[in-house]
Length: 354
Image (cartoon, rainbow, N blue to C red; front, side, top):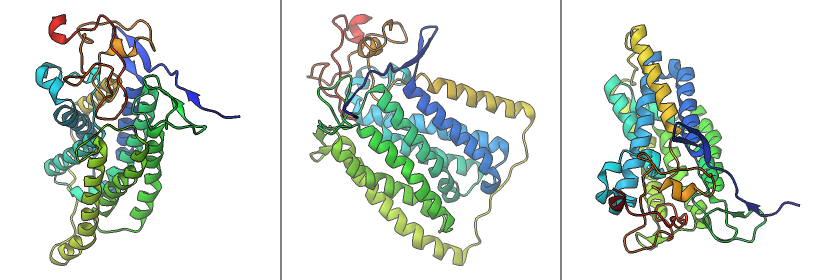
């Protein structure tokens, strides 16, 4: 008979010369890889050269990482990073916000389309489909890491997470399934050949609207209008998606009456050396993504030492204390609602360790 599950998964994939590779990071690597493969297959339909497919992979992936980091730093962990700005680029210590990933994806796609003179709405309509795959895989990485816990439950599928008491809803699996179920919906909408931007707007709306209900099972701390941290953003994103659906349904009709349909501009093929550089850059990006440990900035050896013996502090993984000001390190984390573990007795602040 099936029963509650006790989470004992080692989050560390490998240790390479003192650099730790993570299952969570692997979810980004696989997500970016499938986006690149999608772009290579769809580049004829999208009007992309092979070189532009590599460029879009790079711009999109870097935008996702930068957006996730920027929102995390500015909105969720600013008290810590205000004191330690030198650690902002240290993605290998954790610290990514899921809503920021979407902001970074949209901004980087727009920059690519502006640089290469592509139709932003048409490119966005294509990218949201592999983007949903990325978000689905990412939630599996969250689960393996043991972060983002749900409310306490007595359901038979409850999970006892490493850093939380009791059996809880595996809410990240709910959200991951929701993201993956968006794919057939988006493919169906695309087959109907709607106005440019309608597929992307559908993704924005349904991603956020359905997540409102998923996040009812989250163990959220409440601030920002007495709602869970992400719930406020879910509601705002739902309203944005609804507005985009209305706009994409009616605005392009008037646009097409007065202007010709947008056409893609295909640039001349670059030299082999130029293309080889882009291939190397994509490979390095995929490898770097393996170093991402989780969604919240952490003292890596203190947090994961019991789950993966042998983790050591170093210049890459210093003693840090990311607890909110005025709280103990064992307090619950703010951004995603996953309880923080107590730091080891030897953990001190970054200033003291220096």
